[in-house]
Image 1 (cartoon, one colour):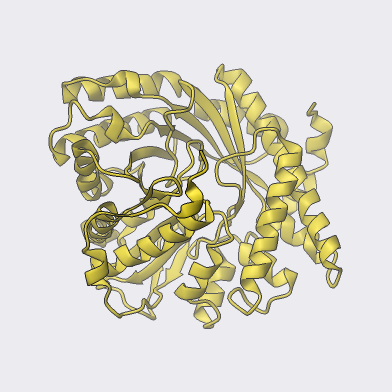
Image 2 (tube, helix red, strand yellow):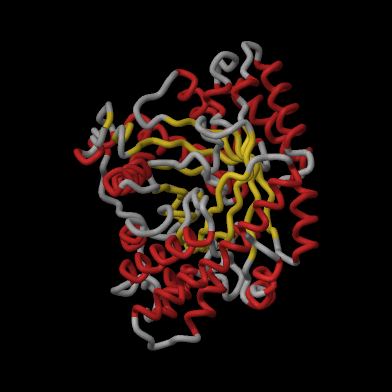
Length: 454
């Protein structure tokens, strides 16, 4: 049983160490909104979201006030919209109409983001999937709260290279469509491999087809708490280090469990999962890179970084699963460059490169996240980066992702200011050798041999 005394134990974490519940995300199934008429579809989608999520924001605010726990974001994830719009949407513009309806619904219920403007195409693309993907640049340019994701591969099916090639072009076109805002549209677009059905974190959140009609998923974050705990045991053995991270992750997860159960009860929606992810913010002391430095590195990116991150990720998961029977989503440590001041510092001093970040994604929660690159980077190069990251996920049976931002008009050495939780980022250099002949092959990369486990 969870009681208020366990939460009171974490007061110092909340008041001094940046502990927060990063998001309460309501997942909503929209399959029953399907219609052959696009206007009717838009109306049904808007009505269902506003009906089910009408009290989400107020409930989050009430819980936050009563328990003294900061709840930063209230969000909604929906069924991948390419599955819902197949009968009605015959052009990319039809999908953009749906995006506007989703954006109006998000505005009406007061959430900050709505995820699920998505397609799952790991083995192949339907016509509906392709139309949805081609609509993404316009949809993200014309909406404020919509997030988009496309799953291009999985351990079971391999990597759909036709989709990878198309997503390289889509990322670049999204950058161009939002160039007046430093290509900010790309910050709301992520390309995934092995995407989970229950992820509460944007931009990759969607409500999977295996989920109930509606569900509450909670994402908890506390890199500042972990850093503070490790600062108390400097020089200790690896055994002590690991135990400290596990115990801290346990306490953080219990806070999320309380919030999730309360939100579920008050909203009358089943509780899904707790996602315990050390998701940094630009705030001082809220950095995953600083945890790695506390473990013993001069900067993130130094030799030993991948090993330290692997240790951190594993102990966070072990502590989390002790605290809740339903840990899911991504869970572990995020390494978004623009959202982590320690990562930014490491890039600026030359300790951290794109290639080292790729190595770190073998053991972190997600992948190449919130990385600004030159705006003149070719679409095929972006596709090659996506393919590399998807291959890491496919072979290692883990979720990987690419949220990369080719900032139009910017080059290496420039800095981009995104604002808010998205922070700022130095523009990082990209390998300039071509991969066009590889990316332009048609078909898919087969699943690895260890995928055949039936």
